[in-house]
Amino acid sequence: MGKLFFYVALALVLVSGLVFAPEHAGLAIHPMDQFTVKALFGGDHVAWYTPTNVTLWMFLAIGAIFVLLVMGSANRGIVPSRAQSIAELAYGFIYKMVEDVAGKDAVKFFPYIMTLFMFIVTANFLGLIPMSFTTTSHFAVTGVLAVVVFVAITITGFVLHGVKFLGLFWVSSAPLALRPILALIEVISYFVRPVSLCIRLAGNIMAGHAVLKVFAGFAGALGAASFLPIFAISAFYALEVLVAFIQAYVFTILTCVYLKDALHPSH
Image (cartoon, rainbow, N blue to C red; front, side, top):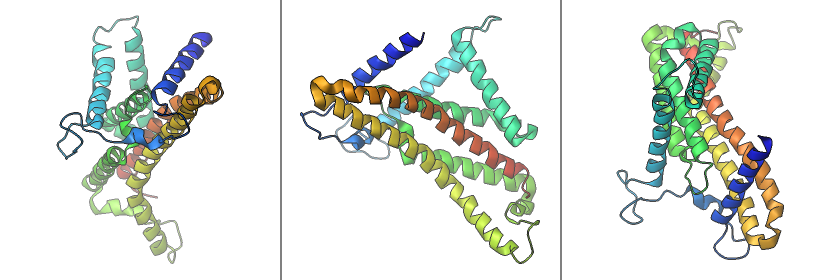
């Protein structure tokens, strides 16, 4: 099994080297070109309504989730299929995360958090396929995800607790003279949350793909000596697989932490 995984990874790396290699010999590598938003139809002009490569790969991510969670577990059995096993594992993993981090009263928000995790992790993994487009490498996509989480949690806090939700910013255990200063710090840190979520996800995914592009460019430019950077690509590609999951996990668990603050706004 280990040898099979190694050969599959090596094959993917070789394909990546051919696909992402520069058009002309030399080291004219442009690692950021892979993030360019391009219209699928109608020339190079991109408007707000134009179907782009971002749109395409977002729909592919949704389609992959549908196939895995809906079609893969449609014929449920005592002995689960591979797709059913993955679906059940993902379900149990996220459910336990929500329950452990945010509490049992947060379980009612589980469907949204599960959807959020599955979209991010699927988009991340699809972005590792050669010739694909990584939607989560764009701040416009991760920014919307982060803002939706921020707004939803803030509204939830005020709906459940009213003005008492502002107690989240008042550190009652601190000395009275320090409380206004700490309150200001808490307010700033609260409004930085969506920025942190957005930049952390997109920045890590973008940086990893850019490095892969650079090494793949070296492999394409060196010709017969391309095996040298290919070893580096193999190791980094494995790391990117891990990062693709970890970043989805971090985004989701931070959402659970923020949800806990909305459900129990006290220090």
